[in-house]
Length: 291
Image (tube, rainbow, N blue to C red):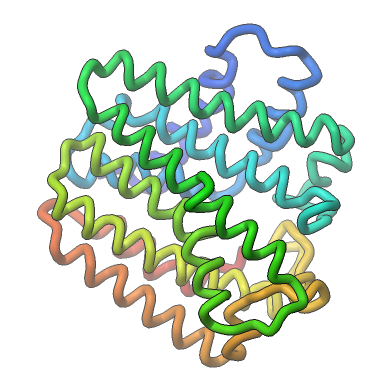
């Protein structure tokens, strides 16, 4: 197993190269796509995919295009999420949001471009692999990013603004808007490593609980966080009537629920063969993050 920094370095070294490998992209479009893609961040999702594949003895190099594709999908979702019609944010990863630099039209196209590029990269990689693992991994990522996954969660998030914050609504948003895109790398990474159905199911439970905890902490940071550290604007959830775990249950209950979700994530890994300390430590560190 590698360290987080080593997986991160693999992703950082490959992202722009993977994008450029697709061929000629109109200059302004490439610039807008790369502006958000190269803005840094934790790269949690691609790191999770590589580490998950590595955990079960898979080929990390073979998994790299899928990891980069997943980061492109995540970045597209952030570009669109920041638009005036969505969360209307001015700051992302410590820099002006894409539409503030390139305009709304180009920001929409940059997001569209990153999503399309991700699908192309995964399918190209799957064809080269010559078996079903690549196709299954691409399907898992597409499904969890799509209309029954992340997009579904975003719809509930947008349409639910200003409504009564019930736990049922908030749980749906957290499961899909956030947890699906944190489960995708585990599911895809395990598939690429050739895992059986039982192992994949355990990995998906880990991803779900990790994603729930991650978003609960995110909700807490919006209340308690520092903009200079967060790299985005805090306090917007309450101001815009967002459906958050904090709004539904309060700060202290959210903190306790986040701890419980991390415990469930770690417990799910006990069903697996292989070295799972990296994934366990990563889940536990979620509770202490400040951005």
